[in-house]
Length: 83
Image 1 (cartoon, rainbow, N blue to C red):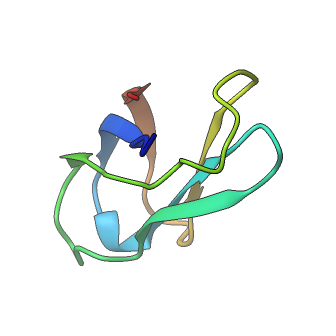
Image 2: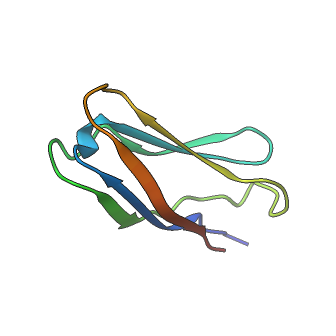
């Protein structure tokens, strides 16, 4: 079975080029979704497809968001996982 990953991600931020977004699987595996792309664009609102066929469905999935610059602020509005 080929399972997909993150459904929708909505992050309010004033400079998406500062953001690194990583999906963390229950076993600690990391899946980089966004890596400082987008330049000065506001907000990160999009869907991602990730092959998670080797990952356990059960367990705690986490979303890690790093702001690599100190002058901007933001917040995670929502995120979902799909299968």
